[in-house]
Length: 379
Image (cartoon, rainbow, N blue to C red; front, side, top):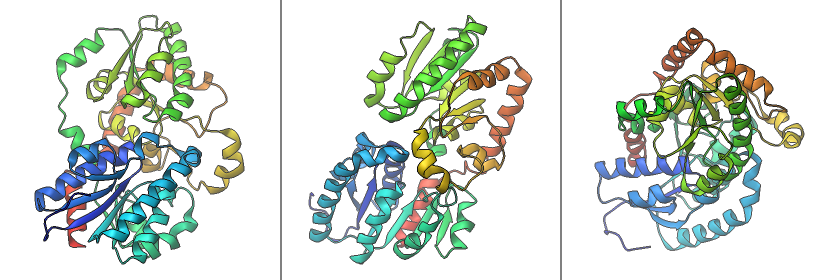
């Protein structure tokens, strides 16, 4: 680690997934606006490194979802060994752990044992599954910055100092204006336009994209002029998407920003996760799909999951606002039927779009990263 200014604050920060890496980068930039002499060191992806974080290791390129995280246990173990060596050599004013409770709850315990205050950003979804872990959170987390409004009272009622800060995603989306010419260019490719968002992780793309393409073929059979715009969330999954998307359909690949894609789309097929909030921000009617292991769900998931709905938009609404097919599906015919039902009814799409925009409004408070920065600096 490079030497830093003698009087500067030094923070440990950790993100194990691409979405967390983006949140971490926004936080680092916000802290720098308050105090340009702060230094961040930790488990950092490309966005956090670009924002100025000194990396101990990068777990984001190997991130996994649900039970896939077990396959990266060895790499995570080696990263934690390197973290331990840094903790032995350097003093830190506080630590920020972003999401990934399987990794970060044990790490929080190690940090607290060394007297380092812990800020947990993006709460473990104990309200959805694994509520018994609350005692670990209460014992090892000093402050918590939560993204969803109902999470603040949930954790406060259980003895955790939680603060609703809003979702930094919406600050980023507001800062990325959509060019009407890009929307028009996409609309000119076909009618209807259907967006496919298969996820940012390799194993999620492998599980979700084939089903999305099956649904796309059913749509194309009913709407021969349909065009399918596929989001490529990061370079690591680009070759996989390019190979799978060569399916005889009218497709185009779009890397980076999704604003034009979602603004032009009549419907989005989206893998579960934060991407559903991005789709809702643009008011795009959506169907949520996720195809995890059926046997893993039967053995473990059904005993751990405690919510009626699994997609974020339906959890926030506390009802089925959008069709969701998860944690797995046996066939894509019901998904295709739901997609065709929406595409054949402009009035239903318009109604769904209005519901999504109304749902997102309370979350889309400006300045989320700044609020997290203020909490961290106060520690």
